[in-house]
Image (cartoon, rainbow, N blue to C red):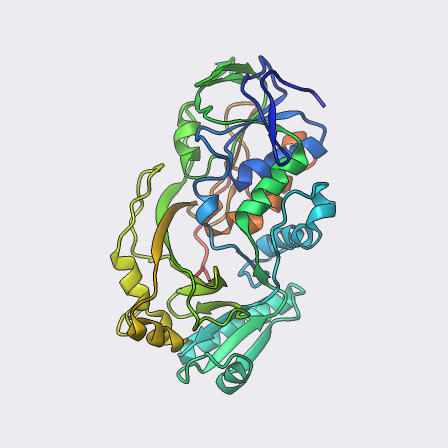
Length: 408
């Protein structure tokens, strides 16, 4: 293993103070996508350097993710790739070759609840499609069956879909485990300032801590991927949209063994965490916003989810949330991050118009559960194992909007 001046190891992650003059691959971004890219790059024979402009690794978008994984998806391409991530999660120590970090996988399932006939029809069509893709363990439950299995379900729920093998995990443990498993050096407080390009080919990355000569780099910077690519005169078809998370520790009413529970009609969802729950909702009316290190929170968000008379109340399909509201003394805190969205809802994985400059971005709300496998795909593109014609996520594809059969 190559050592660098000023190197220290934090429970398995290699941090470096002094940048190397050269690297055969520079990965820009210290979230789950950057860590996964470095992990798979090492296994493909590269010696990557990861640069992260913040003072801590995995401290922006990944850190506020919901922490769920599911194969109940609405397209076969992503199902295949997320299946690969799930295999890694279920055998994480052996898959990563490290024991310092454990994502704590709990296969408590994903439960999708609907109170409308239209929702029930949409669920049946989606489950039929999933079974056609080989996912044959998704159950369609009528309202009574759902309440028998999950007593917290509202009497208004007429149907549910459920898969026990879906579940929950810790995104930060996943990210640090991938970084530790890669053995790649990580430079913190090292922001990318620009790219040196010679005759249309990448020649290096200029950072706040110096220049690194390289012929290959991957932009894996989440919401900042668009502005970074623009420094190389590459325009990425991405927008960033705020997503908020309501954290409520120590809420006795939340069943600790509950699945990720989704209101299939509104998109509001919650999962057990911290002896309470985290609640999430991506309001489709939220306008795009500029990428930001400090994503503003809106205190009205908590009332959207907790007030029983709100059209997006969690109590709509799980009435115990009304009891939490009526009790009134539960503590909560808000966090916010940003989705990076593409016009067709699929990520950007491939080479840009600059030879040697690659992009791994645009994962929307599926970066944590899809990122490890998507990054393997990106590395296969980088090495030529996957050619442009076989890459449905290439940057120069036709971006046709596609219908979504689930609200997440």
